[in-house]
Every structure is written in C-alpha cells, then in structure tokens.
Amino acid sequence: MRASGSGWTGLLGIVILLGQLGPAGCRRQAPSGPEPLAATPASPQVITELPNLPWRITLPPQAKVEPRSGGVSIALAPRSRYPYSLTILQSSRSAATAASMSRTKELAAGMTIRYRLEKDSGGSGGEEELLQGVIAYQAQTLEVTCHDQREYSAPDATWCLPLLATLRSR
Image (cartoon, rainbow, N blue to C red; front, side, top):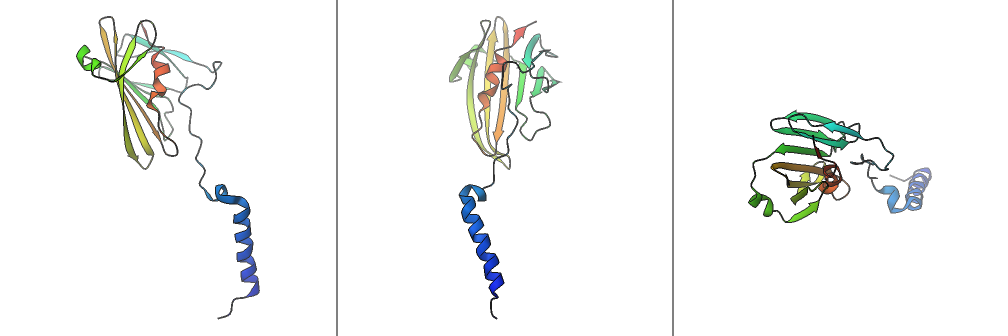
C-alpha cells in the first residue's frame, strides 16, 4: 500500500495547527463555575429569616433555603453541579466539643466560630472540602457544615464564613 501525497499533506496541516495552538490549545479548559458569594458590594443581597431557627442571615437572591429537622440547609447555586451547600442546625454540643476544633474566627455581634476543615479526594466532581463548626452565642449553640467541591481547582469550604458573619438573632 502506498500513501498518497494529499493524505500526508492533510496530516502535516493538522500537526502544524496543533503546534501553533501550543499546549493550552490541547488542554480541556476549566468551566467557570458559580461564585459562592457576590463578587461586588453592589450585588443584591436578601436578609432571610431561617425557618426552624430564631436567626436571620444575608444571602444572595438565588440561594435556596430548605427547612430540615432542627435547622436549615442552604444551597447558594441550587441548579449547579457545585451548589455550595451550608447547613445550620440548633446544637446540643458542649463547649468542650467546640474547644476541640482547631480553628477559630470572630464573626460579628460577639459570635465566634470554632471549626475544622476536612479534605476528601471526592468523586467525579473533583476534590471536596468540608468545614464543620460550632457557633456559641449567649445561651445558644449552632452546628454548621459548609461544603465545597471543585473539579479543576482546590476546594475552599471557608467560602461560608463571610455569610455566617451576617447571622443575627431575631
């Protein structure tokens, strides 16, 4: 069998085109996912009363809040593959349990969250990170779980800390 000249010319054209594109032209580009928080201060925000809890929080308007036993689940991008989920529950955890969490952040209005971060290799959606924390305020204790998953970059479950800083007792 003999190769035709036009076959080699076509193959040579493809090789030249790929060379001009460079390595980036051959890589799958990371899709731009939703941002968990508003990118600008002027972005609309909604103060939301949390069902089942005596609290309110400031959220982006697209956030979906669902009541659950003892608290709420919140998805910031509910129709996305990466919904940025946040769960807030009334808790009976003791102060000793909260003290065992390695990280601390001052939120607002005298509230502090003690939390830990856990990474997981994840599944088909990429690496996952979970923030598990406890907020103690006056005589109330809230248990918080934030989830982030990213396919093309490192997840950051601390995205929820600015939202939690907007928590206010009703």
